[in-house]
Length: 101
Image 1 (spheres, rainbow, N blue to C red):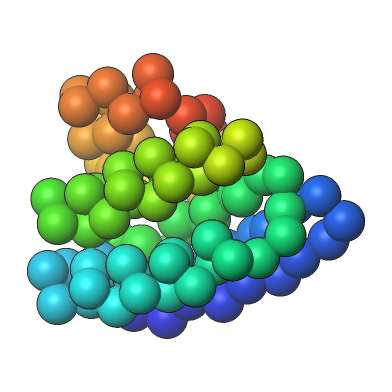
Image 2 (image 1 turned 180 degrees about the horizontal axis):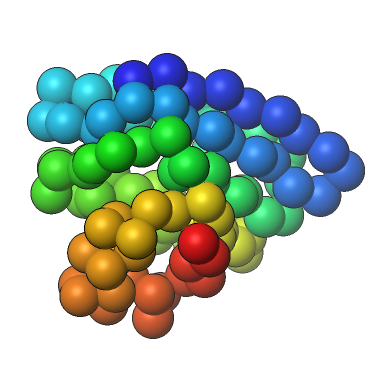
């Protein structure tokens, strides 16, 4: 799994490439923890190149989301595959944050 970031005035864009399995989920958590220190109002996570994600990876996104909301910022996901979109909707993540295909 690779993670890259770009920032403009208000938004921080995160692109993730590769599967988010149990091992990568810990790396994801560490990377997201560092990102929390950045100055932005909204974070946009691009999952266009993520073929699958484990429950551990989803848990890391939820922890990140909780921290984002607690600091008065927002989060959305874009570029999600149909399979991941269905998974996120089935566990009602679309009710927490915006998810765009």
